[in-house]
Length: 503
Image (cartoon, rainbow, N blue to C red):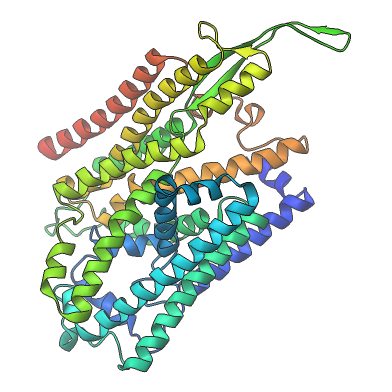
């Protein structure tokens, strides 16, 4: 690992890309800590600390997680990149229903650039609406936006009121999101990894130190003052073990694939005769990665935020009630979240995975899947296999995404700590970091250097090798994977329950 990291800086182009990415991420973190003039975030922070809700399972806590803490700091990057993600979702869905947008998506780089331009325009509109309603809500009815907040106790959030101030704040928030979007695009084009995903990941990981401190404090509660979140040493060891098990399961399923055997017929090229060769077509279990989780979270937050802001901005209680219909912790939230993750998993696969094109390419190159006729039957077979794999991957994403809520509600683990035992944030972080490592690996292997994920680097590390090279070759292997992961989770819960009952 260390040698691979050193090798990254030996390649001039890769070194420039890494430094460029780090510098832009640093700029993004600076913007997440610059408060908007005239907004006092200390009042809001004091309220959440008194309610023990900072980073909690409420809508505000989840949105604050995605913005890297910028929302509760009243920073210029307080809206984060969620408006851009919401705009992207809208255009992705419209692309299925509108033939003109679908045609634009198929026009290559030119069509992609036009679609990105339209997405940015819609992002700006969403920013203006969200930013304006947020400032009006904080100015007029902060107690409706944050139930229990009393300006007389904690102080006013907005110091300077008026139309001019609201326009300035809306402009600053909208500009902040557009700058973040531009930074993400620059990282994607000139840096390493997906820029928008990296911005979200760095924001999520920025809360890790505070979560570790809070986790440590759970061991040092004075005698006689134990609360529901207090941990004994055995419970703490089980929690740490569970953390590694969850992360290992995420890496395993992210890297897991089914190898579909492909046989190439003998052919003559020029005057040479090439014998048939055997190969395989890798189909990933989690083909869509973390995109379904990001899309589902954004789609749940956007209407809920909009209704909450409308109700607090104009004092309309019915909007407040509607915004609480789908709140994190309710059964309706989990059902809708699971349906959205499942739906977006299939939606993303339908966009990115082209079985007809793959079957046509195999046929042109003299390749075929043993036992399956070339052409349309091959495409149907690949679609059938990918449909089953996508279902397994989507179920896994949903279970891991909801796992922190189980810890939070059943065992009273602070939500800020529970978030790193799975959940949306951890899924995004693990998926994005693995994708970034794969890009670094590609650069290193092209220059004949050892990479992070190569077999030579992982030699002698049996567990890590199993995680990186895990392959689901058939249905039996897939069932074995799920039985193993489920068994580890059940073992962790049984151990925790025994500790709570008998000790």
